[in-house]
Amino acid sequence: MFRRIVAPLLVLSFALAAPALAGRPPLPAGAKQISAGHLPGMCTEPGDSSYAPNYGYYYSTTAKAWLAAPRCVPVWGNLALMPSQIARPGGAVTMTAVPDAGSNSATYAPQTRSITWEFPGKRVSGCGAADLSCTVVPFAKAAKEWQWGLFHVTMPRTFFIDSPGEFCAGQHACAGVATNAWSFAGVPPAGTCHARPAPPGSTTARAAKTCTYDTLRISGSVIGLRGRGEPRVVIKLLPLGGAFPFRTTRTDASGHYTIYTAVEPVVVVVGSHYFCAEGERISPYCSGRWPVRARESHRGVVIMRTVNFRTWRT
Image (cartoon, rainbow, N blue to C red; front, side, top):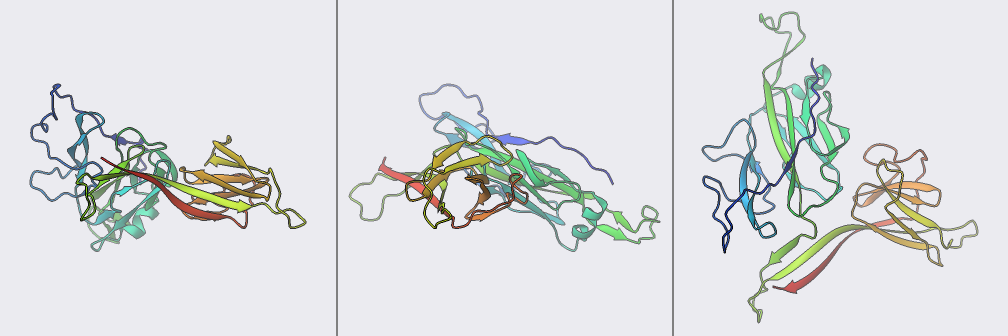
């Protein structure tokens, strides 16, 4: 079967030109309004396209304009893709294709290398003609607006096994017509602030606004041969596949260190030891492969997910 190479497709929110008005400009004619950060679900409304994702518009107070963003994805049948999700800047996202409704493509599409993926950002693993899963880093950094990365997978709807039909004669696994599935991964704007209603009974009617910053806190100790903490040992953080650290610290007088990162997965170098920090776990692997040539993990490390936030009245 064939294999088609597809360039990464990034779907970024874009501004629709609107006349400068004193207040908010009107919603573009014929457009459907969505909220910022809306997770695209399945298309169910009359008039939605069945051949590509459908878009709506949300109003950006930063850009002072209506911005386009994905609203929903069509459903072709016999194939599902994991639901759209929100990702962290620099974080990996895995989408898995699931043939369903009686399809046998989960078995035969990988064998016949008849899977085609379109994906955003930097590939980490999978995403090939024989892969039912695709892992990528959609966006390395947060931007001023929402960023949306499109995943699109295509494969035969099902396979006819040892069919005597004229189109399949002589083939053990004969591919049927193609089906498609779509999904998105979104990264919120840098320093996203989430508005919350004031608590019941509050003396003020103003809303509370909270800005959150999702980070990993990595801490541990470096112990010497005599069982004592080793001071001033260099701790470095490297991006996956990178050679140069983007953050560096040293152990204190007792050999303890703490370092923070919003980038995942990340290679942590403690003296001559290497390990990977991803999610809330440590491993000698980073997304399924060795992070560096050295194959050593570091014991006694604690990783905690820390959400730093500040709240003020608006």
